[in-house]
Length: 429
Image 1 (cartoon, rainbow, N blue to C red):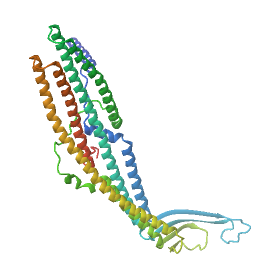
Image 2 (cartoon, helix red, strand yellow):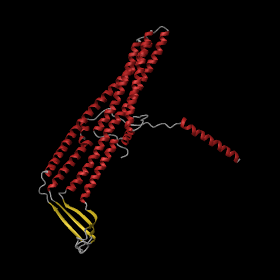
Image 3 (cartoon, rainbow, N blue to C red):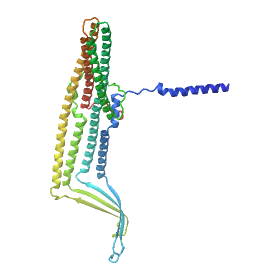
Image 4 (tube, helix red, strand yellow):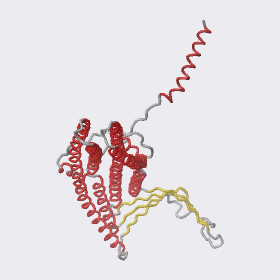
């Protein structure tokens, strides 16, 4: 009984092993198609520009820490030994030299509050860099969406060319049959075959365009995109332009210029503090010493530095900082106007693309119906083969134009969203 059971188990194990060996070939796991959101996430992880912006933010954080350090007291340990010629030294304490070890404390009491201005400026710079990074992400999203929908458009174009090729092949087969019974001329067959060969040549052009579009998307996401899936809904209508332009001042690049203007103001203030006195205090706590006076364990020094004349250097720095502050304000004002103009241009393009897509959708339905009617009329000898070929060509051109308008609508919609700072968010945030 046990032997039979062991044999049964061995047969089952062998069958399971064979099944496992066959699974990778017969039941291979299908690759999940990439969506626009997936491609954008891959591009974010791949982009050197975004990584550079992240490091720039860390640089701003480091400068904030530096500015904070100027406010805090500085503590150090100093050990000093002085050697001298023993034959000429007359010190009663040490003819060979002196030494001391001490803790030194330094604190700036007043310097025109430039340290606080530096901290505020560093904080504004960090916000500026974060806004610049966000704008770089928005511009990257535009590149990814353009490449994504361009590849889908080329793939749909290939499908359209395949439909035209099939229709022409069917025409050739039908014409040859009709020629055999004397109902069609041989020239009609040749004419149709000529158009078929032209379509074959054009398919190769579209394939090369598809390859270029795929390589562009692969460059952005850092790998072969494989299959794509468009799951992002785009509306067939837009709201009022004022709705989109209302938040132009909140766009990330405009906010970055606003923060940059704030940084420039703080730098102008810091430049002016060079005219103010500086008050510092320094304390020494002696751990060990052989210098006079021996009975002193600590000492303090209060230092007041009042600038009186340093040429024109300080005034030149102040004038330069003030000019940079005004320049930053002008750049901020220009950025706001450009943002409004960018939103307006994107809105007009998106609105026109929606209208064109609607019109081409109607045209495509008419072209499909016309092609179907022309085929039926030809069977009833009501139209010529030339009419059918014209209907095929019209259907193909109309479908290609419709797909172009359809994906152009999607591209323009996402460009409008990016112009207003409203894009697909990073899933890792």
